[in-house]
Length: 460
Ligand code: NDP
Image (cartoon, rainbow, N blue to C red; front, top):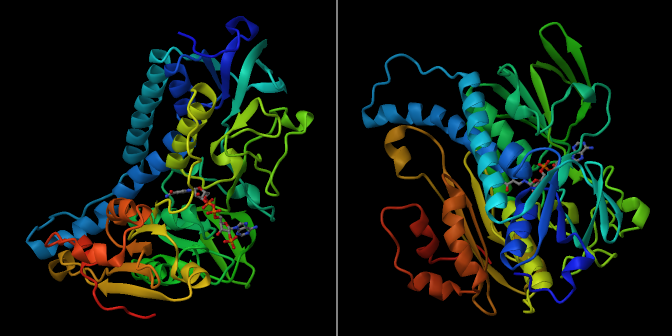
């Protein structure tokens, strides 16, 4: 049932999607459900970065790493573990591979059930309405570029000896000595994961403190908690070179220190995965960082070529790509005119240990915007650790605009911070006031109740 006004015969498809990641698949399925004739071209795996080499395997590995502490914590509650637990990398890796195969299958069936044609191959854009893939030239009314990003590694002597975040999940051998370069999401998450799995883990970051852009108190708290758990943090330095030596890799830092490790993960950011796509021939406009420039309708400078997700340089987060896909379909395959996607106050979690959950403004950003703010901050020992013997602490923080009493930021560092902040994010997104937080009766005994019981401002 085709609902478009354009004659169906003019093009082979109404929408041709390049890339079967989170955003591409969601756009394809949703457009098909609106009656559009849709094809997707993919040359690698179904589900993109998130399913194959991102969120999903990362969270599974993070669970694996948490067991380490769970075994230790259990003793104080009366559990006697007997023989010391032993970690087997191959079991985790291979179980992960099995689970991802299952998810790949689900993605394939989702496309199939939606009547979306799946074409195996890397498509090249010929012009605003034609692509070439698997030897065929195919026409489409709209082409959607949803090719995502790809890990980027700086050039230094021995940089070819590093692994990137696509490769780290499938290492042949468990790295007893692990080093990650970078100070973003991936670096802190993998430093925590390998530390938890039992590696001697090091993080090397060129700046003073990792997680640039996050709330400063959150960053320092996460730094201290990660250090307490045994992650070796090396700030204000970088990798000068890496050399292969007998039994490992010799890493020389710019401050002259030398260490030997088994694996180096370069977590130094991701770039749009545009190579070989043909867009340069069409002069499609890009942003300074090489990502594709789009308007609020997700149109590039060639209006029949659309783009969404990581390739457009917005927040590189799966739920953002999903939301963009649904907006895009509303704009282009329905008669309604949706509200543009609001990128403010998008919650996010960093799965370092303990986790970080955050929504809205950092204290520093809020000070730059509002004349006067109040900060409510609580740093406490979670009840579980009164018996576990663990010295892990938890941070919860609200930032309030004094003029309106609206909570403009909420942050947490602690167990399952993402789970807690997801709920708080609804309130922050809805623009609720601190008074409304205070009117909410807490759930006892939880850590999250702290968010509705902080009555005295820590500072203004
Ligand atoms: P980020 O952009 O977050 O971090 C890159 C890091 O590498 C920064 O600390 C940066 O330093 C550093 N860096 C950049 N260039 C160099 C260089 N030449 N030498 C040394 N260090 C360098 O990228 P990630 O790779 O960590 O992750 C990519 C994106 O994926 C994230 O931004 C996030 O959006 C998404 N992601 C989300 C996750 C989640 O939701 N939990 C998990 C993982 C990824 P500096 O800060 O100084 O620029």
